[in-house]
Length: 129
Image (cartoon, rainbow, N blue to C red; front, side):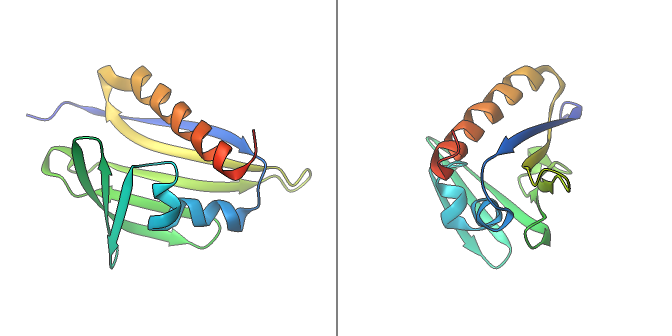
């Protein structure tokens, strides 16, 4: 039986525009720059490849320059999804990336650490370090 999953949420300030950031979050070429070693896409199904592992997810929500959500298609991740939401502060114009993920309860800390590392790669690619 699959272990209970919990939702984690993280927010990162990025020195970029919503359009540029959205491209990195929603396209195969953008995601392969920071999220996975290689990303393929057929229709709404994305194939993410990391060293020694491949996972598939369907893009189930998309609002240009605002939001993208992927639902994992692997049986052991049934019902699990992750989401990228772009928030722009109305007063300052600051762009924040809000990440929501579903992880196994005993892997929360490791998952947050992994997201932190991946977002550092994203920031580096955006030139916003």
